[in-house]
Image 1 (tube, helix red, strand yellow):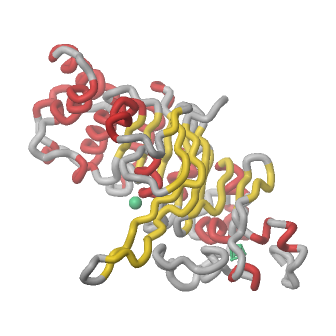
Image 2 (cartoon, protein in one colour; image 1 turned 90 degrees about the vertical axis):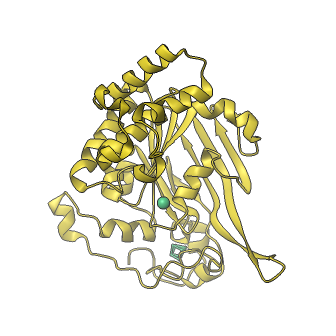
Length: 337
Ligand code: SF4
Ligand code: MG
């Protein structure tokens, strides 16, 4: 089927200004040329360490912030440069669930008012219809209808996230960006909220971009996974392939730190500890973005930015090790040796 969301060469650069005259001296390349498709009903997991640009990417895809370059198509409509007034009409179709339900809910509004707000803004439902819709939404996220008149502080973190989800679903979106929706919650309730999101996806036919730094969570919920490092997607493939046979050295390092449920695989897997820190997105290294930390780096890596190649059906990677044209010219050991 045609993708519901299609992103190409997306860049979000934040200018850096300095000096008395606030002259522009550079840019933080938070997102630096990423692309992916998300098919209807699918969950694309977007993973990477904090600061890799994944939240910025998620917000940019919904046009909650301005994009510097690139294309974003949602249900066939190009929105990358669409003016906010026009975007307003599309807003109901695409929504966001935020990381911190505490910060994203207005403490002075009742639960009912919070969930109703998008209905007030975007629909002409009557008061009674809105009240009914809010009650339905509270049912959908398994919140007691009797809580409608309470304020957010009266709730636990998990309940607040349910309120945030109800609000995101108020207008029947088709596409929802979930930005670390459980990272701020107690471990004991994380699974409940993830199960709820999965349940809602199935019942309502939702399509998710699920942003997380937690690979074991992504393994649970995503159908495909994109791995981000320093503003780029370095690898993207179906979940099974990514966990069984990661292609990029960075993915392999990330995976080596995750608990392996399969005891046979666990015995053979070595922990890969990356040296150094993530470079600044204001000053990424020359050549491959990962070359300063990559255990497999070759001389060419410090010179040439690797192309993103499809090395098997739906298996994408940006690393010279997987580019036969580059590797033919390399005097170094073959991959894995
Ligand atoms: Fe490592 Fe080179 Fe591949 Fe970059 S291109 S990930 S530095 S091997
Ligand atoms: Mg983030």
